[in-house]
Image (tube, rainbow, N blue to C red; front, side):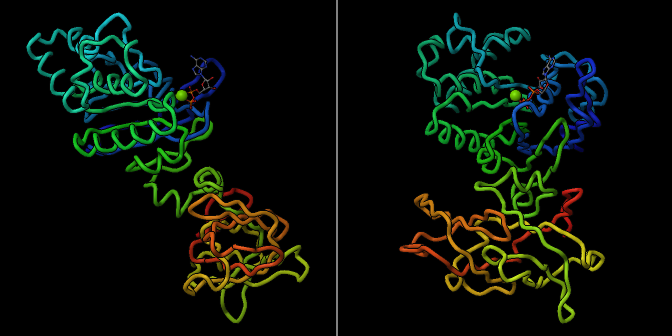
Length: 373
Ligand code: ADP
Ligand code: MG
């Protein structure tokens, strides 16, 4: 049985549809990340789960219990906000205890719960302080602690790290991951940061305009994006999109595309080693080939794989990022970026041969933008 079920949840404010039918089933202990651009409805969905916002239609369940009409404090759900929302006049201990007090939990039980969580989060030495006397990271820890003492069945986070500086954000990210591994609580975590999503999630729901575009593991979202939106949203730099047609040569299916620099030599045939059967029906039709920057290398620098297609192109720009280097070139009229080893471009310039690993590519329908293979 799913721990958290969101079934055809819709939300509108007057004539404006914010959530347009969301379906998510979460197993016990999952870490779901809701990822999407600002305004796509992530916080609205989280607030609906928390009970802070009503649905317009649809159902939210925890276990086998429909909680649409259950008061937030009775939901077995705790939420951590971006703004921490700590009570400024209360000590850290009191902040953590307050929710339990409201639920009429006995004092000795409350104190034991606070002590246990404070130890877990290593904030025992802060218990007597007021929020103003804490750093941003410490406040965030207290906000997490306050949610933890309730021992919720489901834990909600709304962009909990976005007010922290970059270094602290990475540290807290690791801590949240460890916390989840230790406690095994079901988590729904909102962010617009794709690295947070990739590193934390057991599954990611990519949202856009009030709809879930894809709900899958980070690896599947990255390697097999369901559509061009997801493909372009995840990964930095973004996946390259190249236009072409499905073609056949010597009985093999492949892609015919203008891949040489400036398209001077006409289309090339790039054979697909393992084409999906339904691609046969696409012969002669336009497709979009999606290739991640790391699937392109300088020819001769990687082990040959079955589906290496080599193209020649003039490098327009080189960007060293430290661990690897980004090389920009024009392919079929589109700016294309390859993530290559720094040593492979030392002294580069002019024209180079690139090797594209087609076994790691995606094919999309240019009309619907949906994945084909
Ligand atoms: P996200 O968290 O993904 O950035 P939100 O869920 O906060 O997005 O908001 C989604 C959309 O709903 C936005 O366009 C926002 O302006 C709108 N919205 C949110 N709350 C309300 C409200 N109480 N009344 C009207 N519109 C709202
Ligand atoms: Mg939000």
